[in-house]
Amino acid sequence: MTRDAIFAVVKDNILKVLPEVCPAAISLEKSLVELGANSVDRVEVAMYSMEALKLKIPRIELHGVRNLADLVDLFHAHLRGE
Amino acid sequence: MGAHQRVALTGMGVVTSIGHNLSAFASGLRHGACGISFLRRIPASGISVKIGAEIHDFDWQQGLEAVPSADTDFLRRSKKILNRAPESTRLSACAAAQALAQSGLRHARLAEERIGLIVAGSNLHQRYIHENSARFRQEPEYINPSYALSFLDTSQVGCLSEMFALHGMGYTVGGASASGNAALYHGWQWIRAGLLDACVVVGASPDFSALELQAFSILGAACGEPYHTLPHQACRPFDRNRAGFVLGEGSGCVVLENLDLARQRGAELWGELKGGSLLLDGNSLANPVLGGEIKAIRRALEEAGAQPADIGYINAHGSSSSLGDQVECEALAAVFGDGAGGIPVNSTKSLIGHCIFAAGILEFIACAIQLKEGFLHPNLNLESPLDDRFNFAGSTASPLQAGLALSNGFGFGGFNSSLVFGKV
Image (cartoon, rainbow over all chains, first blue to last red; front, side, top):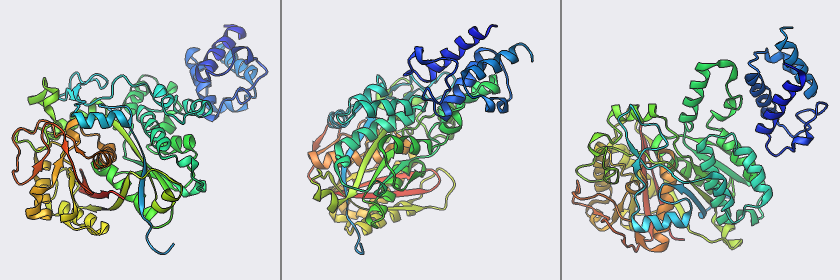
């Protein structure tokens, strides 16, 4: 799966959890906090995306994520089996 | 402070099977509307309970939008908070928004930490828990993370305090079916002692799953087979042919306030909570205990400084349970003696079912409405009274001239509570 396809999944889930966010405002360099996500929103976006991608990632690995690009990279690496 | 403060009722809100706001509820009481029907929301296939007073055709977002004081910012914040909340929390929020709007409390110049919040009930989100359990059994990795917050009863306190900026004391108060009365009594104590100037008391709607209903049924407490096909006849408090309680969904909220401060700010006073009681039987089981009920009623009268003869109306616990109604009659007879026959008695549960944690709050609201508007709501299905010593309400509303009301609430596990409410 490409990074673009993974980003599309993450974006879908951001809009599901934060329906008030403008889709155009969601870009790779943004963090979930910048998009208005609270602590529970952030976990939900990650979990719904992992479910959609059929990924199971130790939660500790999510702690280093600074923005959406990091999140997409993390998912991409796991999907490639790294 | 020193002297005890008096406690007024300044705001009320409801979401019930017979009305989604106060005026619809009052109209339902007056006309003897029955909210009991075949269960649609609770999956009842495979269990013995088929009927209940569910809330139908209610959308919580529209419910909030309909509240007069709800501005755009409040609605945006509230929807964000409630979006992932269980159903019972959403109903509590709608009832609270109505009650706070009616009270005009936001116009009172009270310090925010002088306004408290009590949510009545425990085990408020059983159906939510069961639904999430099913998801967990399927795949533990993908459970909803907000479950960690929302399964807690106290999440209702958190949601409501954020929505309405309530920063005083707050928590949940559980007393089974007496939870509503217990919470009102507790709020009354806080204001009376001068610890708070106002307290929002919310009765949470029970969100039971089929598991809880089936357990109540097997225990013999919930109304079962004889009325499976006759929902409107199922709840019959004090009738010889009663067959157990009928679950009701419903949330009620009241704003209690320091009477002097409320009067100073020109708030409309719906009445005064004059006294209450909460006593335990020392009994872990479901059976009512006569001595405990008598003590609770007497204690409430004593705290209110009232004599039995002062009571002009009784809103009975009257759950339509076989033993419960009989013991309550004995308790009332013991306290009121020969005077019992002169006091009108009804049970709001005959209209809206047994709303468990919210029952005490909704019945307190029913007392306030009936005293203010001067009518006694019907006691449905009372065709053959189990006890002829009482002046039970009939099948239609009748005029009521009463200055002081008693409202009973009794719960499994030996909770006995009574409240005395009257005109100011």
